[in-house]
Length: 179
Ligand code: 5GP
Ligand code: MG
Image 1 (cartoon, rainbow, N blue to C red):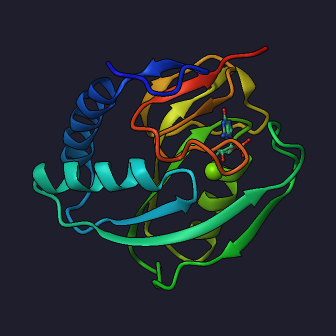
Image 2 (cartoon, protein in one colour):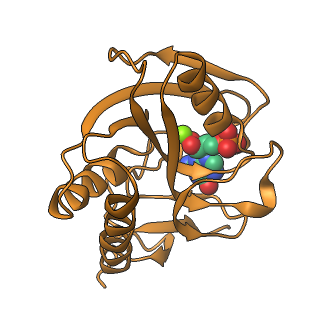
């Protein structure tokens, strides 16, 4: 595949991501109600969510969508212990089936925060879907119900995921080469 960014090594190319999302969408459509409310955790998962939603539609679902912005602040490449809600959803989740969509499951704090919030607000069920799972980095006991790919502890960019606001528009996921 053509890569115009010589400083980035491709980890998952666009076709690999598209194939995986199609399979994930079928799995989700088999299990969750057609009118599930998808809560997209911004910003990193916006590209993944856009592709996943269209996959869910092809799989026969008619999901609703809302957006929440969460940030775990700290140094540039390590998340800290605090999750901050900076923009809330506008939907009422009471009695509804919710699926939270995030880009990367790392320490687990972000997904745990979002899951606890939806549960506390009275969602009937809360499922979770992440594109990438950095399993070895977990600090909070949480697993996602649906996972795109497991990954090693690499700092990844592309496909919505940034480094200092760069690289979100890359069509693939890669790592910035060191040195
Ligand atoms: P957690 O709360 O699980 O520690 O952090 C998850 C969030 O940390 C992700 O949604 C993402 O915003 C950020 N994150 C974790 N790993 C990476 C990475 O490799 N690259 C980038 N750009 N962000 C990451
Ligand atoms: Mg995030």
